[in-house]
Length: 234
Length: 328
Image (cartoon, rainbow over all chains, first blue to last red; front, side, top):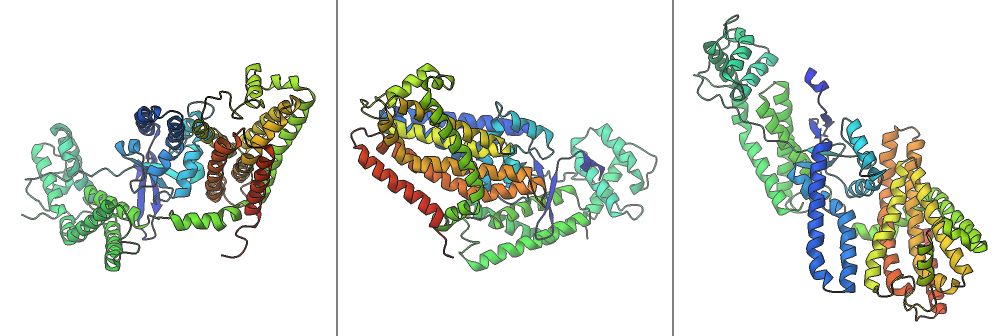
């Protein structure tokens, strides 16, 4: 498929012999998740500062320890949960996985988060941002060294909704990729304007024996073929 | 076979797999797969393999995208759940302390040795230089900072090592944890810049420490200063040198990856270094506790402090050199 050239999808093969497609998250999604995490950490720290501040020296000491834990171990602790993501990442439907798509290991999570220090240089995550922008898989330096990746979670695919169109057998036997194209058109039908749908259906009109014609009737017949291909029978 | 028939035929299995995965996720643990009920674990892996077959078939037959996407999502979730490793826990922690950490340090002894040299040599050189001509301290830090050090280690101070005597032990504990662990983590992360960052942070921190020691010795505060640092430095300086060694290891992997690609060598070196970083973190926590609660106590006689310091140094070095040599 030519479309793959533009995609940043990373394919990994599982031991079961199927290919999983990982969708690396880019700078903007990760930036928003980072901001949200930063805000959450700030709120948590300020919230704890009130009772701890009243406790005097010991309270301040504990507060400093909490600040330390929030700074270094907050991401590690959350990445090792089953969701594999900090709360900020979860909101933006991102998660951290190993390069092969497996859940992130403790060692890798610790490494990628400690190496933040290198990403932060020379200032404000300069190296990390440059690395994320230059790489197709959007890794920062810590991800490179730890062998991890931040990916988008799978979005739920839309169900097919062509509803009440009567099924129609194709006029000639269709090759699998042609069948797939007709069904894909039907899948997108509800998201297109009627005129555009007519234009696209005209390109596929030969499947219903209407080659060279265009219009709502042709479209109905093409969608009918899709209905038939999906397995609906009159 | 039409997509609809395919979907109808296997719908039950997919729904069952999804339901079982959901149940596992809600229970938040791996009990069903690891130890728990064997039949359930076998069922879930069998269903997973079936669904993988279905996905391969669906792709091969160019079934509609919504169907393929659904199977992709299902298999990916199952893959994540089935291969989830729970490698942390008390057992793993115990093994790390008894064997893993000291063995890893000995495995990387060459890097640790270089890191120690890069840290210690500037310490000694700067220490001697500043001892001979104390005014040079002013080219390393501002006069105010130097005056702070004067006050911190003055024999008259109630608690040693603090600019403001009002700060309690607990405040300093929190402060030391943040400060020292950050230094150690910097030494490690600097390795990503081909090791140059590590060398810089090691030499820089060594030089500052040496200059302060030389300056205070010349000012006649050697006793308070060295009795203050002797004990916790067993843990703190060791930890900084070890994390520097780990940083040099990943820097070396980048510069000379051997027969691997640069990236593969980097990932392998980082993974191997992780255990050293675990150990370093523990050492630094111990160091911070000692520094805040023990080293600072001005009323303890110096002799006791030096004795304890000698015991700590022997224990740390002995632990790293001897522990875990027998096959366990």
